Image (cartoon, rainbow, N blue to C red; front, side, top):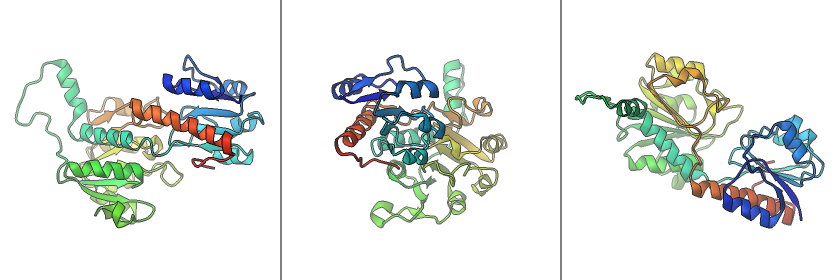
Length: 317
């Protein structure tokens, strides 16, 4: 029976399935493994079921046992793994696409609603139990009729657009290429981010993390937005230059911000924490029972497919 290492604790049904398939080293206490411990624990394993919280860089890859043939990442993203280093060592890396689409799109809409309707301030007032109603009490922004810019019109971006249309929002987007009419559904395509940002009353970031998208929201690009724009990010934390964003929020250039992802998470830039116009979530994008179960099942399927066939359709390297 083949042996695998599972680096984080999974839901019970997923772990039971793994134990039926392989001799598995489970992480029953959900310990955050150091790089050294991950390397040591995987020394006699043929596969690793990793998490986005594991940093499997070139140094780790090069120290893995020659027995390791596949790293199946329990995430749609795989920026935590040096896929080039893995390729050089003939280690297959896989991810879990498609199954996160609906849950992540729902979180994007929660961020949009929370930021636009001043939820952070509202929650604080409700818990203080001393608010007084007035005609201008915590007036926020209405979604209907507003222009939603979507940066990255892949599966998640299109799912956000579908939900936003139900709120009466007008959809604009920028993508690496223009979508076909059946996918675009009359959304307005913009050839560059400057054009998209300039019409975005609200911007939803839904693109992958790449060298090109790192800090794409920065001091210069923040000037492209209409005054009182709202920005939300449910993709990856390195899209936003934090200091520039915090200044724009303090200066009221940007009306509000909604974040589910952060640079260096869980260490959030302290500048965000006391701003009333920032709506924060602790990376809940995929946090539904159905999605987390489906993600783990797909990560398991990826390992099984590779062990059975020597290949995997969700290979990313």
